[in-house]
Length: 246
Length: 372
Image (cartoon, rainbow over all chains, first blue to last red; front, top):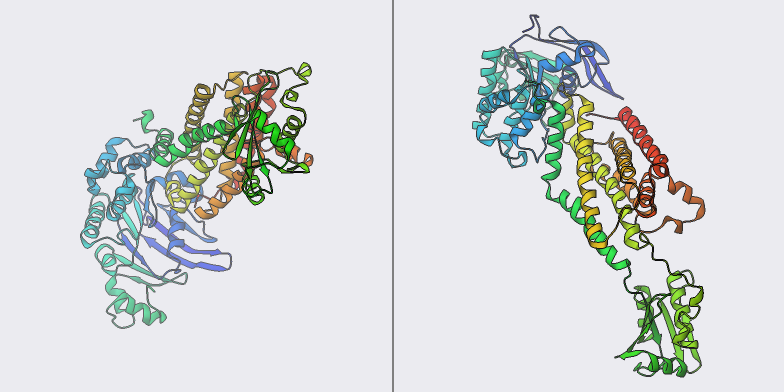
């Protein structure tokens, strides 16, 4: 594993789309094994920031280092370090769960042994032969998580991985992630709408609004910011006058 | 570890192929529908045992039982078989071929309805002053029907084929409508399957963010496109073989020219439409917009490229443009090989043009391509 103080280092990054400034000079660092939650209303700049970390978007200004390397010069290497799950990704309906996993495994030159390991890890062994379009919402989320974990990533970027799941399924996913940190010191950047998810899983919470970071710290730290709030939504209202999720 | 079954290109091709063959609708539209279309159109327009001409006779008699033109009346009574209010007149001639004239005696308004529906091509108004023929002079079939009907009623059925010493009947193969249709349908199959199969798949994957998910891995982008095109090509080949097999067994359609030249053109046609498919699907993530773009490309070619009827019916000034459309190039060259015995030397230019179109569109498509 790469020995760098920060697995992700975002330095004064700016990004605009035509007239809209999506990210206005954000800096952020994440240590190996650290789990952070990214919260904010729609249009806060979360997705753009995450996409720049994923190498999908390029910053207009500023720099991003993943394990000390930049996307421009180390694209292939960095793809091997990250695993991600996008909120709205839909895999091919007419492939089975197993075929989907084997397809993605082939991109990392991994064979069927690794695919079997992943199915056991995500608890979908009995769904290997099921077609993707016959999987439930929770099973699809697990499949997407499994695909993200194939390459033993050092950084996981998960976009609302438990949205729409029942409490049991949600807890199963949380346990998989916590176990992963214990075993592999994986870092996590999680975007979520659930405060308890951020609290249960993450070391740090980063609240974004209008392209800036508004608050950053442990849940306790940011709730006491500006004099004791009961929820992140309450804090957000006191900071901006608006609800966190509208 | 390095087994071929673990290779990303292999897995991509397998995945795309599985996706195609597991969709029952794909099998119906790709395999069954073209065969049904060939069968239906082949039966409807390939004439066996002579021509059929339908005419309506309008009289002022409200019962339509009696014809008022005594000449036409006595001619039909003497020569035709009468059934209810219609007459059937069989004209036979070995050289000119047989023609069956069916006369339907009906009211004026009904006769015009029948004409509009294509059930008759000529209306005869018959009264005591004689017969008058109503038909569209721009319609060649109606004109021929008028000539035959007016001739035989004026000069007797012996006048049909009276100039037979100057007639030399042709018995060439490859001159039926089905012989014209099958090469066109094979070309259209390549176009439809590529444009819907490749373009729509790419647009759909983009809209479902699957493309974006895939390029966030070390997958080679070229492998994805190559796999998509390869799986489609294999499917196109199977569809074309099944359609040809049907046409050969049912209609006796034969390939008179060179098989290798046909294969070359088939490959060139697939390259052309694969490239075009990549180009038209290079940007949009909205499947409804994609639907519109694909239709805007394939529908005009389906109409003007001479799949179902000759494009020589279009005005002269536009024909050179039509001839360079990719579907026209494929359909014309396939016809040359099927019906005129063409070989490599006759079709290499078309194959080269199609390949260039494909590579050019592919290159342009890749410049514009949005992965997310």
